[in-house]
Length: 317
Image (cartoon, rainbow, N blue to C red):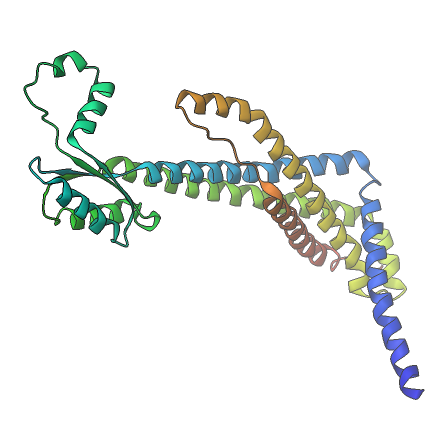
């Protein structure tokens, strides 16, 4: 019985500790509405500030989808000798398929190559005057995704050109290099803009809490006079910063999804011009939840610095 009496107060203190945290957390949400207009304006600014980097994140995510589709559609064209026997070509195809750098190989014989050229070139009548088919058989090689970059594709091309029976290998590396450069520029630009906007969130929350602390200066002095601990005084302001971040993150998520829906029709129409079925990808639940967590973390960091900077300077006179 003595052991139970010893543990019960400890358990009660632990429970009351968390109950007190919950009470102050919900009370701090009520503090947002003491000045509803100022709070709503602050939340709107936070929502827009967080929505801009999240919109850039969605833009980058869709650009990476497009990049992956373009790289997957890229291929190495191997032009074979015209006199190469059919069986030798099929054996070469099977041999190339065994390369770990190769995802797939498609064979097009000379007649199929001429037919395709006739359809896409617009010189069908002129081709009828030719005595023989001038086009060679072609093997189209799709690199494995790990080798669909300029360096990997060039290395694979050099390896394939050592195969006997291949007269020429062709790979347009220039557009792959340009695409990779554009994506790197986009990533660096978005990262820089996101850092600036997230820094603005820290400044907005910190300044808002500084004003709240100054408005409650007399209350803080009274609390210090009656012996309230620093943690007790700091806690409501920390929770207020977290609520600012959470609600701002939720608003930013909503604004981002609105932008995606608003842009979807234009993107669909543009994709149709290129005979593509591409559709915009939104944030999704995981990204939205991460955005809210990011907002809460930024709110906590900003409130912690503001609280420790300004409440420390308040002393009862």
